[in-house]
Image 1 (cartoon, rainbow, N blue to C red):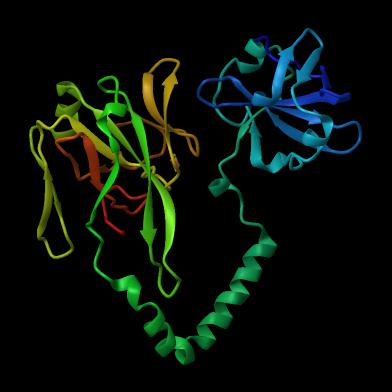
Image 2 (image 1 turned 90 degrees about the vertical axis):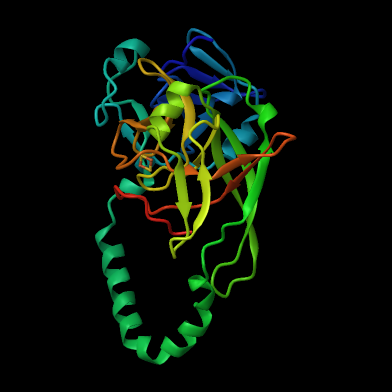
Length: 311
Ligand code: FES
């Protein structure tokens, strides 16, 4: 499909609704993921390319009625940076648009804490410290479950038949029951990335040694054997814990990419680029005779070089 252009008219199934004022890019593929539409005086909406039916010279046709587009949340400029502020070279040339009007997502974790928010939080902290001695016995009772030993239960996440090719990241999603402090038990959606690794990738992961997993008291929980073909990586980026994806990179080939701050890892989990302080976290994995993949769901402290288990 042709790329949408700035100032193109935007037409819904029932009427014209405005024009394209900006485009939003996927930072890795450099494809347009959204257009920003100025709605004839009623603000801007960010419209995913999934809504686009056809792109013509000066017209973008949507496959939704205007009421659906108007119901989308207003476009928030603060959630994005222009391509001048991140390194994506020659982009405006490729897309034939005006510099400054091509945006890429701005990681929420890097946004400035506003001064007013800072003072508000500061006041809350002072109040909390004053009240702490009175609240301590109650807190100790309520927080007892937080100091329970780690849960080393094996969780079934899917079948290896889902993996069609070696050295290809495949996401397995699963649900896990969690109980936090005094809150009632709830179910959270989690994911791991599983690879059927070639011997080259396994060599990079294990570097000739089996990988042992131990509990807080040093007791051995499990050993991932260096010859076992399946490898599971925690679904959380070791930088600040965002979810990452398996994507095609223009020059590096297929990689794990974290969109939050653009950390890039190869199939063995090794950091190729970005701020990640360590490789992806491998998890204990085993596969039953019928091909069911099981992992121990572990989480590790983000943002630090060494692997420190927290869940
Ligand atoms: S969370 Fe920052 S790069 Fe992944």
